[in-house]
Image 1: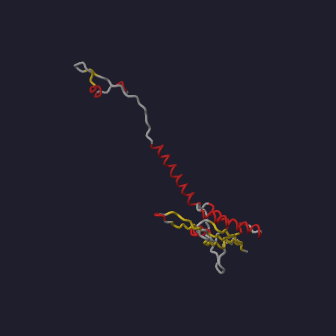
Image 2 (image 1 turned 60 degrees about the horizontal axis):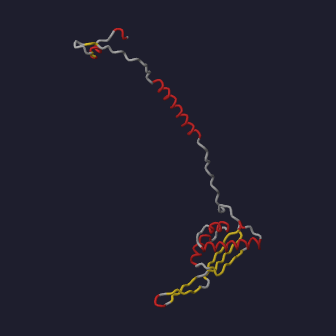
Image 3 (image 1 turned 135 degrees about the vertical axis):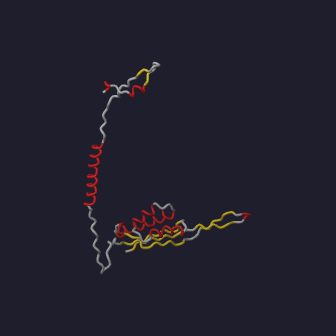
Length: 193
């Protein structure tokens, strides 16, 4: 069953509407309406109005759900041209042609077909996508085993620091009466230990 809607004498150039119509030809009606809603052209707005009119005609006259409709045909024909005049140099007049369009949208009901293989071909079995647990767990276990000895070695290899107080340096006086550090370093004192 086909349902049509026609908009005549629409003040949009047919060439500009055809650009938009090529994008939605053959698509489901709901999807086409969603695409046309966000097109920034005047032709898309007029085409969407006509499409929604065809969907409403199908719903009211034939009790067809809008989800079951698909665009089967879109025709954009030329309408009459409005002739206007623009002033030119030296008193002359130029002609402006304001073009119009006749937009025809035909929708038909369809069943969204499930994807079926052609007759005679068998579906190939899908490979199992199992998780390879041994590899990942083994890698984590290896990392843990490696970390434990390193921490143990680091603790064992640390040098022990024994804090000691500096030994007092004995200063000996020289003949001139000034203290000599060198003399005191050369002769260790017995009571220092």
